[in-house]
Structure formats: structure tokens, C-alpha cells
Length: 153
Image 1 (cartoon, one colour):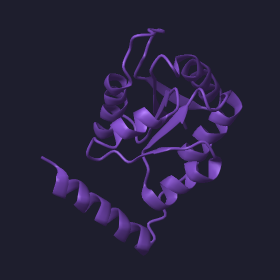
Image 2 (cartoon, one colour; image 1 turned 90 degrees about the vertical axis):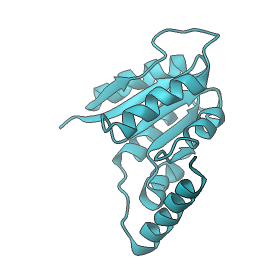
Image 3 (cartoon, helix red, strand yellow; image 1 turned 60 degrees about the horizontal axis):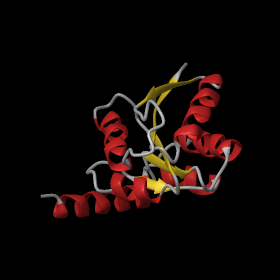
Image 4 (cartoon, rainbow, N blue to C red; image 1 turned 90 degrees about the horizontal axis):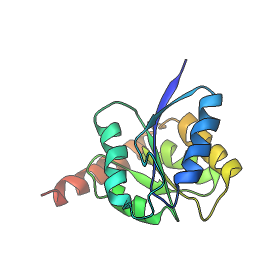
């Protein structure tokens, strides 16, 4: 069974995104490439993050991965979008724990921080994890959603 994931990057993460797409395809992931579709030094990560987030919010995929230089700008942008729960992860524990405890649906990585082998391991940890549905995690997620609603304009 193929599992789908949106994969996006700006110029800082473009090369790593291309390599990661190939590697994930080899292990039976269907890649929805949301851009950048070519290296463009002048592209802006907020524009491309929106494409990745829209693919999650529309239901095309359950999760997205975005790669920029550090992962930070993408994460800040993604977390402005209601319904997106993004985290920068450069270790496998955070990549799976973010899903299990916080229902993270958007993984951000920095191509200037990690290489392809770690990127593959992070992606697998993120994509293979499931939300725990433990009462305490459900309660906390509800509080996060309430905060999101309170500040939505």
C-alpha cells in the first residue's frame, strides 16, 4: 500500500528535497511534490509552505514535509496556518514523538543542518508514527485548537 506525503522546499532545501523524494519513493511512499519544481535562488519559503499546508488541509495527504535552510522559517510560517501543527526536527525521537503526543502533521527540516541519511530516518519516523489518542494528549490537543480558534481572525 502506498502512503502519500506532500514534499516541498525552497532554494535552501531543493537539492535535499529531490534526494529525499527519490529515497521515499523507493520505500513505497507516493510523493506529492508541491515545489519548488526547480532551483530558484530568489524563491520565498512562505509561498511554498502554503502549497504544502494546503495539501494537508485539503485532505490530499495527511502529512507534509518541508525543507529549507534551517527548517525554522518554514516552521514559523506553517504554524500560522490554522490546522497545521509543525515542528522542526533534526532527531528521530522528536519526529515520531511530535506525532504521537502532539498530532504533528507538518515536519520541517534544515538542509544546512542535516544530510540525506538523517533526512530519510526523520521522514520515516514522522510518517510511520500515529497519534496516541491518550486522554492527556487529546486534552492538550484540544487546548491547542482552542488557542488557535481564540486568535483566529
